[in-house]
Length: 408
Image 1 (cartoon, rainbow, N blue to C red):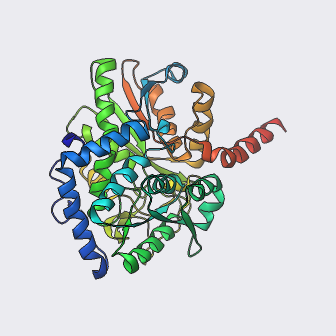
Image 2 (cartoon, one colour):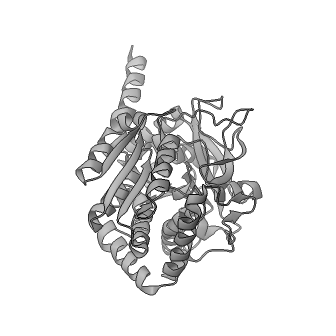
C-alpha cells in the first residue's frame, strides 16, 4: 500500500508548500515534531505498518466506501451525472477515522500512552475517542463550549467511549480556541502524549501526514469511476475547513489536467467581516497555530471572529497545501452560505434519502448550483464526507422555522 502515501515533491524537507506551511511552533515542540516526521517516514516505508492499517481500515472502519450514483438528484438538476463518495458510511460517520487510525498507529510506534485532540463538529473527536478505545489509550479531547452545545450528540459519544471532553471557554469558544488548548497541553506533556490533529493544518509534518492518510478517498474514487464510467471525472468538489477531506479526494488527481477541482468554504451569513469562514474571500497571508497560510485577520493582524452554521468549517485559517494550490490556480475555491448549505441539506435528504453533515452540505450546495449548467455527459464527484445525524436537531430548528414562516 505504498501507493496510499505516494506524493509529489511537496512538501519540501522543511514542510513548505511553496511559501506556505513550515514549522512555526515553540522550541519545546521542535524536537517532538522532528521525531514525528522521522517516525512517519519510517512507517510510510514499512510494509508491516501498511498491512496493519489496511486490515483495520477494511475490517474495523469499513473501507472501501462506495461511489454512489445519485440518479434522482441528477435527474432533478438536469445536468451532469452526480456521484457521491460515501465517506458517511464509515465507522463513526465521517472520513475523520482514516487519519485518526493512522495516527494512533504512529503514536504506538513512538511509545506514547496518551492521546489528545481538538474537535469542532465533533467528528474528529469521536474518531479519536474510538481509536483510543480500540487501543486502550487515555484520550482527552478539547472542544469549544459553543460547539459542545451545538454538537451535544457527539460529546455524548466521545464520553461513552471513555474520552474526557474538556470545554474551552476562551475567545469565541469554537475550533480555533480548542486547537490553542490542545497545543498548550501538548507542550506540557509531550514526553508521553501524541496530539492527533484532525485536519490538514498546523505545523509540519501534520498537513502531510493527514493528507496522506486521507488520500485513500481519492485513490478509491479514481479506481471506482474508471470501473463505472471508463474515464476520469470532469469535476471534483468537497467542502474545505482545514481541508482534510478535500485534499484526500483531490490529491490523487492533481496530475490529471482535465479534472477540475473545486473546494467549498463556509460563506456563513455572507462575505462580511466576522460573519463567515471563507479564507480565500477577503483573507490574507499570515501565521496561525504553527503554519503559514491564508487566514482571516483584521487590518491590525488580529485573527477575526468567524461564523458558520457548520462547526467543522468554523475556523479562521485553511490548510497550507490548499493555499498553495489556490495560489497556483490548480484548485478553485468558492463558498456556500449557511442558507445554501441548509437548502442542500434538505434537498439531498428529499431526493436521495441521504442526510449530509452540515460540513458536507456546503459541497452539496455547490453541486446544486453547478450541475445544471454542465452537459449531461459530464461527470461530477462530490465528497459526502460525513453523515448529518449530529446536525438534524440544529438544522431542523432553522428549516422548520422557515417552513412555518412560509405557511403563515
